[in-house]
Length: 96
Length: 298
Image (tube, rainbow over all chains, first blue to last red):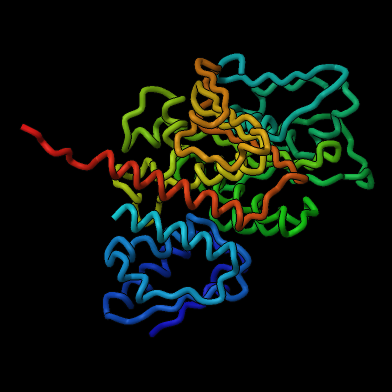
């Protein structure tokens, strides 16, 4: 299992899609490819944009469908961040 | 613009009241004209200091002849800022909120909206000048007015790469529709773009009863304020929202967006996202259904 601590790289507002892409390409997708589980830790993050969350996890859901959500978990999310993640996971599954 | 090479700026002699969107548009337009070809008349209205303080002349490269005394009350505003990179955007968003003296509840939707709009410019507008942003707090209406403008390729060109568009207004309509992005025709977007940003912003404005306008090419779409009892009804199709639309306006090469956030009426951000969630998922589901093959009854 790998844990990705976002605050170190994005600060308290997760909006930088370039950083999201790097995490997706270098950490999340390789981990899922190997069969690992991923924990994305939002501790210290007060908000996130839909664009950031989409860039972070949409490709994993496209590749693995709903199974991606059995292997990725989201830790320490406030209410707003939880809502954004829920929106992205729902529309990606609807799009599948 | 009297022609494509000359920019002439004039104002009413007695009063000047300018939305930050107009400032952002003039500053952006100024980048396409040589400073020596910008003719700015000497302003006489009492409120002329506003332009100096907001930094308009600095971006136009012209001298205003207006002195701003440093100890004058500056109010709550974000001066014109040019943003050309993601790094500059991240810094701007961090610095912007303290300038407006906002509570966390009000700061949340504003930083969200500004970030998404400026990121759109950086990613899609193809403008060497990036985005111009300005914001101002208005005490009388307890509102924040925000303007963001670029002189890039405009929405018709970016959306038209993946979707059929009949004109600027149709392109704006598609850009405001959830799940439609210029980067792909595929449902769900690409790994980097969902086509959700403008729909979110329009929805935030709709639920909060805010003013929202988007101008690109020769078309302008304005979301009109909804009665409080109807604000929670979100539409995936922006033309079903209470709106006005105009075509055949003077050509704006790029995109300009204005928002007035009414701070007395702002709904809790997480509750607002819940409304967006329902509409978004339904829109994607319905669009998928439209693509289902129909049975052939022979």
